[in-house]
Length: 419
Image 1 (cartoon, rainbow, N blue to C red):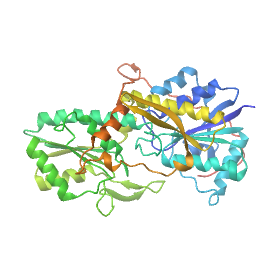
Image 2: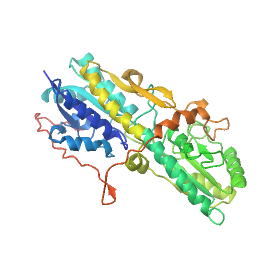
Image 3: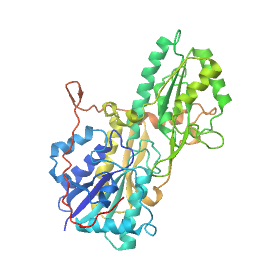
Image 4: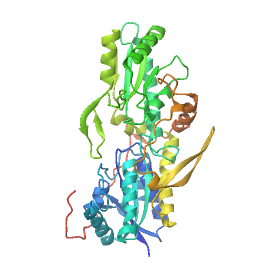
């Protein structure tokens, strides 16, 4: 008999996470004999715990297809950590209660490292608490820090956006640097892994072009070395463009822009490193500086998404369903690189036990000897991920994105669960 499925989105959303949702929903509809309805969790795993489920069967095929070109998280996301089964048994008892009430036999969780940890913990329900469920994690993170997979869906589009934005800003700086701003600093996301900062280097076709300096979290920030590099760049080119990761650290491991606060997962919240860098340059070198923080813009810029990224995001959603109906559980679809040029890839299984809470940082052989640039090997890795344009449809001059009905499934449980 067909079982229903639960799908949810978790963590920071991206320009293409809804393409993964599209892959899940379209593939599930093709396998109606094995998967009944797909219920989406409103705001991630919280929707499962609170029995706040969305019946996706009310959405038309056209609306589901339109998810492929719509940014954000169509069903709402969350930052919420499940405890271990021994420490927070009540959470898992509640999940089983909700799953059983709605005949859910498949669980798909779409997110990054912490989300894959959630997926792995839910997969343990069958083994430890006796509730049969096929659980598959679906990769998504703009940080590109998931292990095993060649890249993480969401990253390619961010890489394309920041490289494009930085190239365009550099044209502005070239025009103004003689009598005005000489230094421009772009701060991008990346707490421990500098993949997005590294991708900024794709803006340059030649050594003399921006960005001239990359500040990666993998390389300890040395104030004097940095200032010497900036001064030399200014002397040589008359301007200096810098891409900096929000997670740049001092030699003692402390974040340069630590705010002293933490998020729901216990990660340090960072307070903005770009103004710190520009203030340092202005004070020590006397140059006029501007800085920018694209923040949510970089991860929601669907209007300039990478076609490669879009195809991969859809493929992992489709593969998740195919894995589950084939009886696979506690796995994640991973992208495997087969060749660099032309870029070829396929999808393989990765054990959730080897993905959850693991971080893939930029390797040392991708970083130049002085720590301020990337190597040819890094460029070969990064370049294919931004290839291709997949523009959304436009209406009256603006992108035409879909908004789902998101109709709630009637609750069947008398008890409430407080998160």
